[in-house]
Image (cartoon, rainbow, N blue to C red; front, side, top):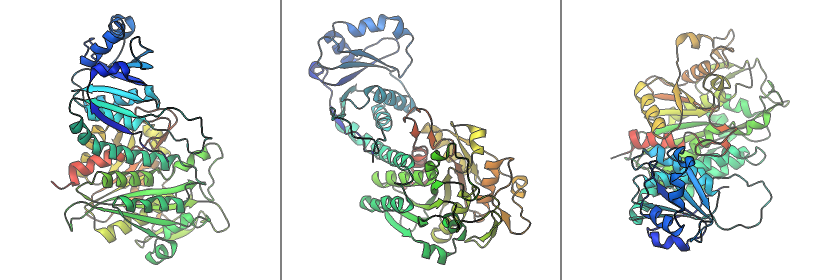
Amino acid sequence: MSSLTPIRFADYDPKAMAEMTGRVAVLVTPEGSMDQAARSANRMAKGGIARLIESDGFKKAKAGDVISLNWPAGMQAEALDVLVLPRKLTPVEARQAGAKLAKVAAGKRLTVMAGSMNKAADLTLGMALRDYTFDDHKSPKEETSGGEVVVTSKTPADLEAACAPLLALAEGVHMTRDLVNEPANVLTTTEFARRIEEMKEIGLEVEILEEAELEKLGMRTLLSVGQGSDSPSKVAVMQWQGGDEGAAPLALVGKGVVFDTGGISLKPAAGMEDMTMDMGGAGVVTGTMKALALRKAKANVVGLVGLVENMPSGNATRPGDVVKSMKGDTVEIINTDAEGRLVLCDVLWYAQERFKPAGVIDLATLTGAVIIGLGHENAGVFSNDDDLCNAFLKAAKSEDEGAWRMPLGQAYDDQLKSRIADMKNVGGRPAGSITAAQFLQRFIQDGMPWIHLDIAGVASVKSDTSYAPKGATGWGVMALNRLVADKFEAE
């Protein structure tokens, strides 16, 4: 599993740059104004930065770009990274710049001369988010020099304190990426549950509900998904009690299908290897709970994830079967590849019955249809509550995580009518992501604020994003953490 590159905070001493090894980053505005460290580096490098500023290449540079001068004269550093930043910038701009800096550094020792930079904490978060690799299953390479990051500041103790909750957030994002990137023969339902149980060490209360207990609770739709697999189905419950005693928690519910073959409704072979990411919703819930615990959030939050594997076998659920949910409604299974909603509906009902939450948010790599509608830029957001939904959309925007609200309505719900049961598990091709959300809404109790996040397009992508290399993104951890801070955290 990945771990954050060590980040150390030190006093700002431009004179010491001559002896620094690895890479050294200094700040220059788009207009070419150098700060104290850049001026010192310019003198050490015999006017190298000044010549850069006068070049045509610098005139084309955008805010947040990094221009590297390799093996600068007069310095021990292997590279002098000139970070082009305006003096006034938003947190998102600072994070994106930090991510670009981390990408250029690529695991090498890096010293950032932040000085009195306004948003240095966000710059540091951007570096921590982008400084990620998943190479657990590659043969070990030759040992290289360490990738320590040193951020120098005129007030290093204050900056370190400001960065502490942000680095906790980055740890949660990295955990989500690790889970989503893992192959299914490693991240079985049992291994996923074990990793969740390890978080007892950081203060989370954790319970693992096994199949016998799930049967007793009546979670038949969830169990129907996993009954064709040798891996046992489970529900993991994580509780963080950081708010007022007795205050209703926010409930986060995640789909944790560790591998999805489609079951009897078998998927095409091409691309099926990507279905290791079908537990993305559970990954986001787990990473968010880790971040909340590490930063000791003053809120009550419960995370529940349904862990199953959807496999074809002689014992697998068939199309045409009718299964009774924990709520008591019956579901006609038209397509066994529409399994995520069967997992979520039981866990959603259980979360409401047991915890009486202040609100419920579920996350799932639920439909390919949402990718057709929104691509890989935005998650689909469905909600029955404008206040909660608007608060989430605001949080997602502030954290630079794309999210777009989609409609709900009775006409879509009518597509789920079944001839022989209370509902079908699919509503046909039209509006597939919406009918999936309508299915879930049938398991939301009256008056319960609810959001469904369809993250099929954003959980794992084929090219680099602003904050992550290709693969798992960790989308949603930052937005949910911000929502908790803005709306549910005690004063």
